[in-house]
Length: 172
Image (cartoon, rainbow, N blue to C red; front, top):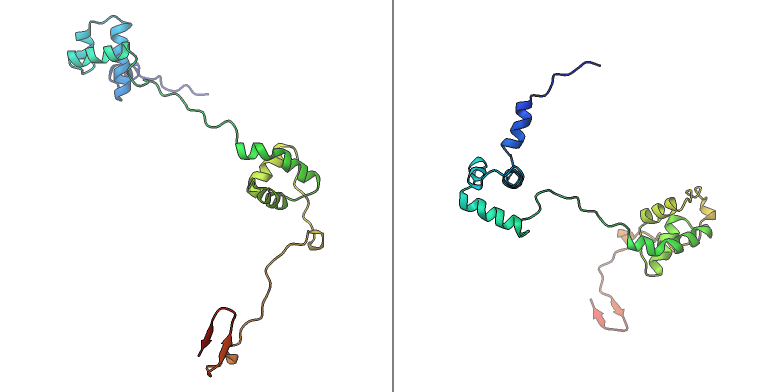
């Protein structure tokens, strides 16, 4: 493995001596004053503060009125409440050999709508393998779209007619 060129220590030192962001500059100025015990006027001058502004910065720091100097990662939600509430129902329906689509539909009818993807994720987390593809005869009967007859334009007639309805009469 070849040895790379060493980092320039002056460039690394410059990162600390010439902060790029306001938060880093505040940190370095406060550190110089509180840790290295640099006089406040010198710390202010080194980091580009007026003496009065630096005293205000120190006061704010002592009284914990500064925003956080270091960003902390925020954790997201630990669980998904809708999925968590439906796990038992999903497992029970899969044990009855329901597909993910049938489970999703059943949950929707019970008032706990979950997408097919969410159902699939719960089943995978619970250790269920996908069901093998079913033949059309093996699938449950569902109400589907009906193929209606197509209107024939040649049957359209503009002659005067009368239509009778329960709500209103219309003469054309």
